[in-house]
Length: 352
Image 1: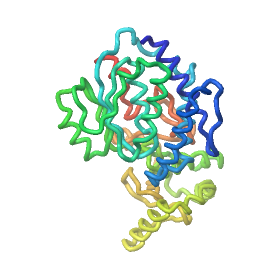
Image 2 (image 1 turned 135 degrees about the horizontal axis):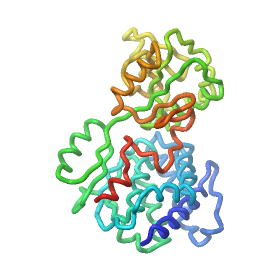
Image 3 (image 1 turned 30 degrees about the vertical axis):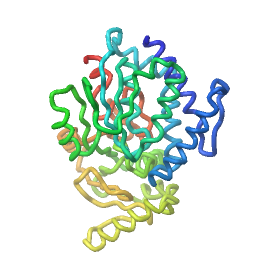
């Protein structure tokens, strides 16, 4: 299959995913013959919500719409033209996917498709209903994918390389189990935001999306703030207020109540607006309903801290972002060429 064919198939997939909205299905005339698959996909969205309490329809649809926007021809062309893919393909690549947010392993999936390799997919039980339907769409669209995409219930077998995503603990298991094979092993990463006190209300409201989307469960969610000494959090909390209905979500509320009780019993100093707590802490990964913060004296000292912890960071969010930094509100809108852990997945697959 040529790169042009892969591109065309992914463009079609983007249109297919774009049909799914918060309040139902907005049918695309191009897929009138796939009505059964479209209905089944919508049913799997509902089933995923019942399977995983963190997967609301809003979060799933946000993910599908994000990928629908990403899989447009111009985006795919700009991405693919960065590589020479004329002599790639033919390998068997295993992908072990996480399940913290909907379709979290989808980027690895399309990277492997673009490079022409076969795929063995080991899904998380927390997110195993949507991707098989997406694969079915591709197979219906082009039957050559039938022998290229396989979902594994047991262990991966006869693979040439592997991409595995998990926690720091599971990464140690992956490194042992997959030793001797080319691999990308992803560990825990977190995202941080740098505030100066000069941010506008619009910028802080955009930051609220980086914090609250997917309940903060993704590695691209901001879990820590760096603020100047003496920073006044009043404007920050005002900008967060539109997310206050999140406290009505049972799982989120339970985590909020539990973590607040722990902080109070431990006599930790916290700032609290009734649905989000701020706690001064040097760690990067904060619990649900909590964002850690730390003060900095000057930008140069902060830069040194971040450089020394680069392997722990996924996104650095700030006003007027520089190279490899992200603007407020954009963490959950990555481009196709924005790679997890800053490891170029396509380049890895290209060289197999």
